Image 1: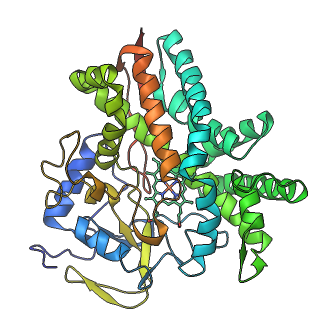
Image 2: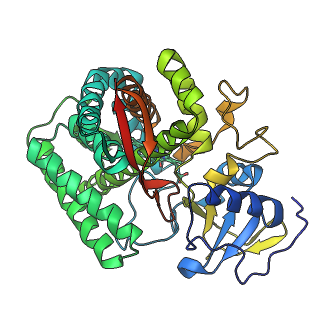
Length: 399
Ligand code: HEM
């Protein structure tokens, strides 16, 4: 891997600078062409890989590049390592088996009528008002309700999850370490309560994530309870953060491209393919990271084992060497299956099918219940480790 301009190790990339919905992709394009292996001094220093092949190459070496130390930039959590993301194979794999069982195609199909009812009810509120925040009032609430169903939570638990996950995201955005830790503690307490409840009264292990984790054995032994709590706590974060951002991005894109909006409204069977392309265009993660077990050279830069390497999935998915006209939306792009929005390798997203279902139904309901919609205020963008809108004020014209 040879690149034309070498970075000075001081600061090639500043993810803390103010970004807009469009400027962020211009910055990624700049990095890909000028400094594809970039160094940043922010967040205690890290490397950032902007090119597709570099990101893929790291993902294809899961033992050499571990998730065990710093799997995200910035690091804000001080708690212990949580499976499955923070473990390497083979320790990682039994946890993954327990989760895959309850995130199967069949389980997701089971949940679809509920996902639709929830999306339709939440969208109805916005459409009746005629305006509101697409993210905080729709796309952030939907995944919480879906988790409520998946985890069989009661109404009070769903309210607590809604408030806590919002507090967690707000604290991340404000870089409020104490706030992140306080919300994180609340999520841990919630996970502890759930594990204690399911231990007393297990549910169907093909349907309930906590019961599946409690019943799965590895080498004849159940998982340690603290690891099950940590795993549930991890899912409560990873499964709630990305979907709202993607749905927010899709709404902004469609408000600008009314021809596409109308096409998808009249031909809803195209929506699943459109969602795949939207995931490529508006990949919500840029901060999942690895650390190398040995000093390595990537693109001529020497990277030592104590330096996190952020995999800029959102930039890799717009790499012009892989995706033709990468900033354009192209339905049925021939190589769309190559996109890295859900990662790759052993840590690829366990919730991919559920996420696809949530996103598809969310877009279907948005289009079905409106004749049009427009951004009517300032789009607020997320900071690292995500990328994309966390607030999208919109007006809606109902059908
Ligand atoms: C738009 C929605 C989503 C996107 C784009 C997304 C993306 C990702 C990515 C990129 C990874 C890999 C992280 C890495 O490389 O270090 C990942 C892992 C993971 N995701 Fe998702 N995710 C989404 C929704 C969900 C949902 C709804 C769930 C839960 C039901 C979920 C559960 C997980 C878990 C458990 C892992 C860790 C897998 C492992 O380490 O084996 N995700 N996700």
